[in-house]
Image (cartoon, one colour):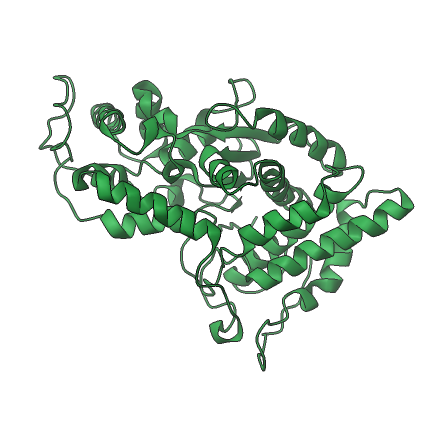
Length: 396
């Protein structure tokens, strides 16, 4: 299979890292209580742990995971994106509040120890339906997520028993045993002693923090990720972050956001199973997958035999998410412009209306045939006098 990655964790991780991260050669502990005697000393050499996912996920299909740059998909001058959005404004406010209060070395500890990815890796490697699952900082979205999971598995014609929906929690970082185990299992070359030191330092970092709420801060879990199975290591997984749901709770979309986020990620599981995709550059392939997942989710969310959510309410939520603005045209994680994502969602809504009149649910194959036919119009430019490269949509 082709490996994919895409950016969903947008401003929070990037802005915080750019604003606070500095090169360092010693383990950060100057603003914290002394490490215990059985840990590495505070002057032990530090390691750079960011970027581990390249080896961990090599050869595995991943969507909505933090990704990097790639070959150009489209001409940026052909498209327009908003300069600011409610989500970006909210996130930037949280970042600025943290930077204004916290000691710089505390932020460096969080960045240099790759703490924003540890809950993700812990969920990927260790969380299954057999472990206790709750969704939201205090479990406030557990009912909605579990209900939507059941509905999705009944709705789409793919084998669903092996698809696991699990949570990632920033509060995992308070558990030194779990954090140390994650470092050892997920990072090449991390010794037991170093893993214990990192876990201890992060625990104390959060305990001393005035803003990170014992890990219940969107910095650590502002993401939702869909991952194909890696035999012997994990099954097909959807990982739901507390942080991304918390952001939309505060923006007033807690009634629809968990369902919509999960439906989008499940759309990628449909793609994994049916091998849906296109030819083209890496960003073009990712853009197709993301717009396709937008359409699949909109179809399910408003179908009378799906989630039966109010279309107007779903679109209000989608407007906020799409207005985040993905204009990273050369990124392997390019999701499509806001206007393209709106068009994909509207396509899904309209198909749901048509199917409901006939009392049927389209199979994934039937849906995809219609989507492929509509795709050229969905990616049409949203700026005047623009030119779009020709792409041949095909199933892979």
